[in-house]
Length: 237
Image (cartoon, rainbow, N blue to C red):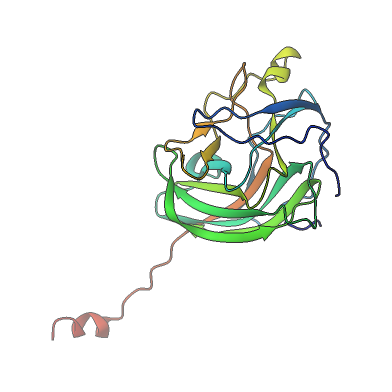
């Protein structure tokens, strides 16, 4: 199992998100191989929103302290019921043009997300300064919450590496794959001086695009310890 490579992109350039949310990207032909199964635990769900039907992906150039991620609608994605808490069990994230050992690290965070898909501070959990390898990277879970919406986000700690990868709605459309999703699930949250709330969805000329990230959750009813009769009577003394 890989941690959460040594390949510099030929197209290295200084490029970050601008205040209008536009991000430089390039098309890449990449038949993405499957990663190992996230979990075999009974009651867990593994959620994938991306579509690799065409064999093409988008590589997006972002940079220092910019944050991106996927929002999970747990009642829809994992059949979460009211009153349940969902444990984030782990995730796989696909990166390209990594440069391990040179400080181009990524920090992952788990957030509750509001109805506008904005982050609710502070984060539930943080996995700091991870040095990604080329393609799939596995990381442990980051916590639990009763919120219906959770976002697994990544932030660049330095420079413009690695490059973020999404599927390609445009290429999928060209070869007759399933239509693009009707709702955005992958978002850019901005960087220093221009945080986006609501965030900016990743999309191309055809429709919404999804980050290549797969997360696992398990949802269970929160337990409440029954009070003893003696404890109840003590309240009225």
